[in-house]
Image 1 (tube, rainbow, N blue to C red):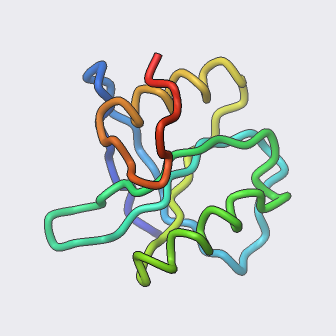
Image 2: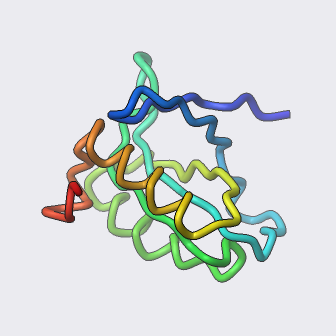
Length: 108
């Protein structure tokens, strides 16, 4: 079993993400995802996103973009059914980690 990676948000909340095995069956469920560069110090978040359907692989485009700069970038996921919860978590992580590939997205 894969070990969870804990990421803290600006609010102080801690979120547990699991590395995504890209070739495995993915559930058609809502999820948050981060693309991270794995370092000896831990996961460095380079992009934070959310999707209504993890199985539709909308995260793949962001991963390909990330791998142009961060060759070993990995996708980490956390299932969240409610869009409002996913969006609040995504914003919390962006505010804390300032992922470079999220650009100038709202930090509201």
